[in-house]
Amino acid sequence: MQDFTLIVNGHEQKIKAEADSPLLYVLRNDLNLKGPRFGCGLGQCGACTVIMDGNAVRSCITPVSVAVGKTVTTLEGLGSSQHPDKIQQAFIDAQAAQCGYCINGMIMTAKAFLDKHPNPTADDVRQALAYNLCRCGTHVRIVDAVMRAAKEA
Image (cartoon, rainbow, N blue to C red; front, side):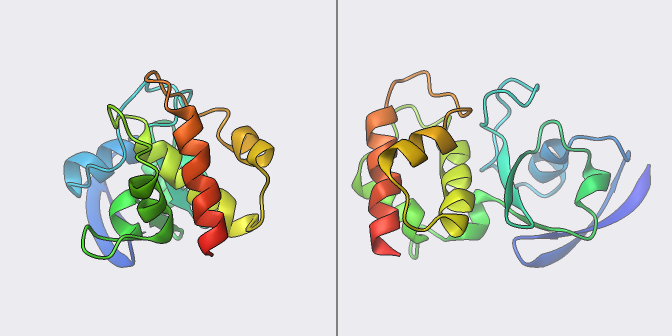
Protein backbone atom coordinates (compact mmCIF):
# COMPACT_ATOMS: atom_id res chain seq x y z
CA MET A 1 0.00 0.00 0.00
CA GLN A 2 1.15 3.49 -0.82
CA ASP A 3 0.03 6.96 0.23
CA PHE A 4 -1.53 9.07 -2.50
CA THR A 5 -2.84 12.60 -2.51
CA LEU A 6 -5.61 13.26 -4.99
CA ILE A 7 -7.56 16.40 -5.87
CA VAL A 8 -11.17 15.25 -6.11
CA ASN A 9 -14.05 17.69 -6.55
CA GLY A 10 -11.79 20.55 -5.53
CA HIS A 11 -10.60 18.96 -2.28
CA GLU A 12 -7.29 17.35 -1.44
CA GLN A 13 -7.82 13.74 -0.44
CA LYS A 14 -5.19 11.50 1.15
CA ILE A 15 -5.68 7.78 0.64
CA LYS A 16 -3.78 4.52 0.95
CA ALA A 17 -3.99 2.14 -2.00
CA GLU A 18 -2.03 -0.06 -4.32
CA ALA A 19 -0.68 1.97 -7.25
CA ASP A 20 -2.62 -0.14 -9.74
CA SER A 21 -5.94 0.00 -7.85
CA PRO A 22 -8.68 1.28 -10.15
CA LEU A 23 -9.54 4.91 -9.47
CA LEU A 24 -13.19 3.84 -9.39
CA TYR A 25 -12.59 1.67 -6.31
CA VAL A 26 -10.85 4.50 -4.48
CA LEU A 27 -13.61 6.97 -5.35
CA ARG A 28 -16.42 4.67 -4.27
CA ASN A 29 -14.88 2.71 -1.41
CA ASP A 30 -12.42 5.14 0.17
CA LEU A 31 -14.01 8.51 -0.63
CA ASN A 32 -17.66 7.33 -0.57
CA LEU A 33 -18.49 8.95 -3.91
CA LYS A 34 -21.30 6.98 -5.51
CA GLY A 35 -21.73 8.92 -8.77
CA PRO A 36 -19.28 6.80 -10.77
CA ARG A 37 -20.72 3.30 -11.12
CA PHE A 38 -19.17 -0.08 -11.71
CA GLY A 39 -20.60 -1.31 -14.98
CA CYS A 40 -18.40 -3.58 -17.03
CA GLY A 41 -15.01 -3.13 -15.38
CA LEU A 42 -13.43 -3.05 -18.83
CA GLY A 43 -13.83 0.61 -19.81
CA GLN A 44 -16.47 -0.24 -22.40
CA CYS A 45 -19.78 0.97 -20.95
CA GLY A 46 -18.94 4.39 -19.50
CA ALA A 47 -20.87 4.09 -16.22
CA CYS A 48 -17.67 4.86 -14.27
CA THR A 49 -16.73 8.01 -16.20
CA VAL A 50 -15.13 10.92 -14.34
CA ILE A 51 -13.52 14.10 -15.66
CA MET A 52 -9.77 14.24 -15.21
CA ASP A 53 -8.05 17.48 -16.22
CA GLY A 54 -10.98 18.27 -18.51
CA ASN A 55 -11.16 14.87 -20.22
CA ALA A 56 -13.74 12.15 -19.73
CA VAL A 57 -11.94 9.03 -18.50
CA ARG A 58 -13.09 5.56 -17.51
CA SER A 59 -12.20 5.27 -13.84
CA CYS A 60 -12.55 1.47 -13.79
CA ILE A 61 -9.44 1.08 -15.96
CA THR A 62 -7.50 4.11 -14.72
CA PRO A 63 -5.00 3.26 -11.98
CA VAL A 64 -5.19 5.57 -8.97
CA SER A 65 -1.51 6.43 -9.50
CA VAL A 66 -2.42 8.12 -12.81
CA ALA A 67 -4.73 10.57 -10.99
CA VAL A 68 -1.96 11.99 -8.78
CA GLY A 69 -1.32 15.62 -9.73
CA LYS A 70 -4.49 15.83 -11.80
CA THR A 71 -7.89 17.31 -11.02
CA VAL A 72 -10.63 14.69 -10.80
CA THR A 73 -14.30 15.65 -10.92
CA THR A 74 -17.11 13.22 -10.19
CA LEU A 75 -20.84 13.69 -10.60
CA GLU A 76 -20.96 14.95 -7.01
CA GLY A 77 -18.47 17.68 -7.92
CA LEU A 78 -20.64 19.21 -10.64
CA GLY A 79 -23.50 20.42 -8.50
CA SER A 80 -25.93 19.52 -5.76
CA SER A 81 -29.61 18.68 -5.69
CA GLN A 82 -30.23 22.27 -4.56
CA HIS A 83 -27.90 23.79 -7.19
CA PRO A 84 -27.37 21.38 -10.07
CA ASP A 85 -24.90 22.10 -12.85
CA LYS A 86 -26.50 23.15 -16.17
CA ILE A 87 -25.91 19.70 -17.64
CA GLN A 88 -27.50 18.02 -14.61
CA GLN A 89 -30.51 20.36 -14.79
CA ALA A 90 -30.89 19.65 -18.51
CA PHE A 91 -31.01 15.90 -17.82
CA ILE A 92 -33.67 16.53 -15.16
CA ASP A 93 -35.72 18.79 -17.46
CA ALA A 94 -35.52 16.32 -20.37
CA GLN A 95 -36.37 13.41 -18.03
CA ALA A 96 -33.38 11.66 -19.58
CA ALA A 97 -32.95 8.99 -16.90
CA GLN A 98 -34.90 5.80 -16.88
CA CYS A 99 -33.11 3.26 -14.69
CA GLY A 100 -30.35 5.82 -14.11
CA TYR A 101 -27.40 3.45 -14.20
CA CYS A 102 -25.72 5.00 -17.26
CA ILE A 103 -26.55 8.59 -16.38
CA ASN A 104 -23.32 9.27 -14.49
CA GLY A 105 -21.31 8.37 -17.58
CA MET A 106 -23.63 10.21 -19.93
CA ILE A 107 -23.54 13.40 -17.86
CA MET A 108 -19.79 13.34 -17.25
CA THR A 109 -18.99 12.59 -20.90
CA ALA A 110 -21.41 15.28 -22.05
CA LYS A 111 -19.97 17.83 -19.62
CA ALA A 112 -16.39 17.24 -20.80
CA PHE A 113 -17.59 17.34 -24.42
CA LEU A 114 -19.59 20.57 -24.04
CA ASP A 115 -16.73 22.29 -22.26
CA LYS A 116 -14.67 21.76 -25.41
CA HIS A 117 -17.48 22.01 -28.01
CA PRO A 118 -20.07 24.51 -26.74
CA ASN A 119 -22.13 24.64 -29.96
CA PRO A 120 -22.58 21.03 -31.08
CA THR A 121 -25.04 19.56 -33.51
CA ALA A 122 -27.18 16.61 -32.47
CA ASP A 123 -24.92 14.40 -34.61
CA ASP A 124 -21.88 15.72 -32.70
CA VAL A 125 -23.57 14.80 -29.42
CA ARG A 126 -24.48 11.31 -30.64
CA GLN A 127 -20.88 10.77 -31.74
CA ALA A 128 -19.50 12.04 -28.41
CA LEU A 129 -21.77 9.66 -26.47
CA ALA A 130 -21.39 6.71 -28.84
CA TYR A 131 -19.24 4.73 -26.41
CA ASN A 132 -21.54 5.21 -23.42
CA LEU A 133 -24.02 2.37 -23.22
CA CYS A 134 -27.65 2.74 -22.15
CA ARG A 135 -29.68 -0.44 -21.95
CA CYS A 136 -32.98 1.36 -21.31
CA GLY A 137 -33.04 3.15 -24.65
CA THR A 138 -33.37 6.76 -23.49
CA HIS A 139 -30.86 7.93 -26.09
CA VAL A 140 -33.28 10.40 -27.66
CA ARG A 141 -33.90 12.11 -24.31
CA ILE A 142 -30.19 12.04 -23.49
CA VAL A 143 -29.29 13.80 -26.75
CA ASP A 144 -32.12 16.28 -26.08
CA ALA A 145 -30.70 16.96 -22.61
CA VAL A 146 -27.21 17.65 -23.96
CA MET A 147 -28.60 19.95 -26.65
CA ARG A 148 -30.62 21.81 -23.96
CA ALA A 149 -27.47 22.26 -21.89
CA ALA A 150 -25.58 23.56 -24.92
CA LYS A 151 -28.28 26.16 -25.54
CA GLU A 152 -28.21 27.24 -21.88
CA ALA A 153 -24.45 27.81 -21.89
